[in-house]
Length: 186
Image (tube, rainbow, N blue to C red; front, side):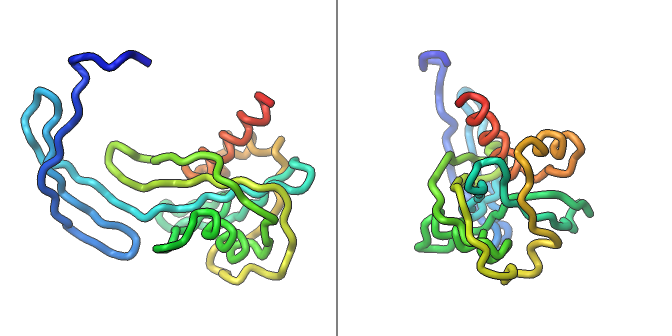
């Protein structure tokens, strides 16, 4: 990383207006001026914070995942539980709730591993990756629309599943690749 110099300048934001808003997102048109440039309007998608939960088994050799269909691109894939952080809720509480709802397993605890923005050039969509070890089966998933299958996937199977396109969700990829790098470097 280089030191900030005189040529480093920040973009200046001006007015913004919402083009469309729902519970899920707010599409805005924001006036911006880049350093040394002319002002223009830029589309920005603002979305709610989400919790991405990576739950390992007690031994740390398998991760709890769901397999589901995504109608947007008509694909099937493996994902970790992800859910919207409701107003006034902590990401960790969201993660615990979502894992239980989507899988039927109750994590014994979660902690924040990292936070990221998946498409920062066009969207403000904060993602908190949570991780924990150990979970107790409490019953069937309460949200049956989330998963066609729930399973504990061997960590050694993750990279082949990614290479085969069976894990494609961006939040899941960031969370699992982070996990694998940490384990490799440990």
